[in-house]
Length: 358
Image (cartoon, rainbow, N blue to C red; front, side, top):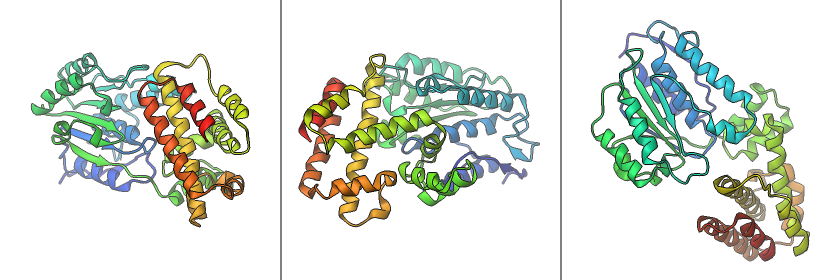
């Protein structure tokens, strides 16, 4: 056991089992070479990975009573990067921001690319193989690790098979099962789980000063994802965009085909194309599937579990005219739409197909 006694400062909501595990391996000085942080988006996987890296690279790690210390040059560098990220309003620009530090390297799928390339991984490995600038760890993070190309995954595997001392690699994914099982077998998998709504409710109320109604709405709307709940509360543009898509789908059930198609037309921005458009369309399908799920819950009398509690009245009114057989067909329609997107069908045509076949 380490002789040092630290107080850790993790910016995570829920998933205490993960921070406890990370603290334990830091204190016992039993940090492994490769980890996989697995779980749905907006649970804090990347945040946890970056803070883990910051703690290990903190230049006051052996003397500070709180980790990270937030005072040494390394911690100030990480803090400056976070401040820069907070200033950026565009989600796509935030995605393109990379934390830059001599002993820390982060890569992710490039915009409008389907996979992380072998060139990215080779550069990643080359950087990690360089000597530490501060005689400390070399830490690399791969976001969207499930999108590694076959060649990139094989190149990474060679590095994992010959691990170097004080080199740590963290792979971040929504589902560890989507990563090569040979890589998984050489890694410690850390599973992030959705956070109970009451914990998110308290977080919004106490930490973000949300009103009780906002805390109730967003803690349910986020489906156990604290970062998403915070975004609903803090990002008015994001909030409006989500609610607009929710209302469009709800209104479909009181409109004719022409009105539905006109509504689809308003959803598309000609400036957004390629993989970014596909990503946004997938999110639209997620919202619409969530509404179908709410109708299923209402049908079974589980009103207290619905996600879109802020539209509960509208949902109950429409549900009266929806049979279970029709709901099943609607779920199938959403499933087929996801498959169409995967087959590179134009996203607008995908949503128009839903509007026509409701």
